[in-house]
Amino acid sequence: MISNFINLIQNNIGYSEYGNFGDLLYIILFIILIALLVIILEFVIIGLFLNKYNKLLYGEGSILAFIPLAQTYLLGKLAFNKLVGIIMVAISLLPYLSIPKNDYILSVGEFSGAARFFILIYAIIKYNRIKKGIISKEEAAFQSDQYSFITKSETNVQTQSNKTRFCRNCGAQLIPESSFCQNCGQSIEK
Ligand SMILES: [Zn+2]
Image 1: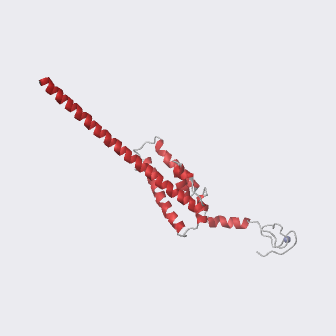
Image 2 (image 1 turned 90 degrees about the horizontal axis):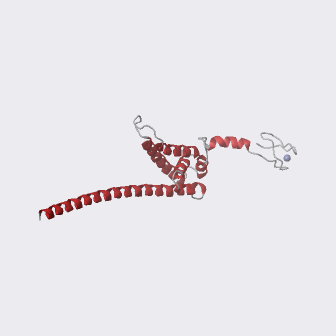
Image 3 (image 1 turned 180 degrees about the horizontal axis):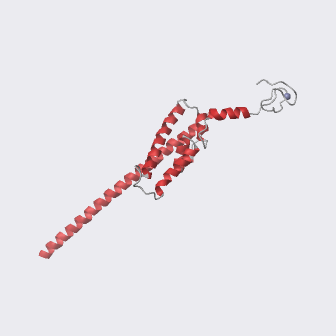
C-alpha cells in the first residue's frame, strides 16, 4: 500500500518533470522556429526588393538577390556602388572573426546589422527617387557599376573630350581638337 503510494508519487513527479521539460523544449523550438522564419522572411523580402531594383536599373532581375552574401553585395551595389557592395560583404563577415567584444560600444555583429539596416533604408529611398524620375535610371545604373565615387558629370567631361569625331565631308576620323580635316581639308565646326 505504502510502496504503491510512493510509486504513484514517483511516477507523477517523473511524469510532471518530463512534462515540464517537454514544454520548455517546445517553447525553445518554437522560438527558434519563429526566429528562423523571421530571418527567412527578411531574406526573401529584401531579395524580392533588390531583384525589382535591379530590373528597374538594368531591365532584368538578378539571381544575386536570392543568394546569401551576394544579396548583401547587391544591396551595397544598388544603393551606392560595387565598392560599397564589397565593403558590406567584408563587414558582414567580421562577426565570424573572433574580435574581442568588450572594447567597443557596439559589437561587430550589431554594427554590421545596423550598417545593413541603414543602407537598406537608403536603398528604398533611392529606389523611389529613381521610380519618380528624380534620379535617372542611367545615372543610377552608372553609379552602381562604379568601384569609386566619381559622378557621371565628372566622367562626362572626360568622355566628351575623348569622343572620336568624323569629318562630315569625307568621313575620315578627325584628330581631337583639330579645326580642319586632315584628309580633305574641310573646316570643322566645334
Ligand atoms: Zn574630310
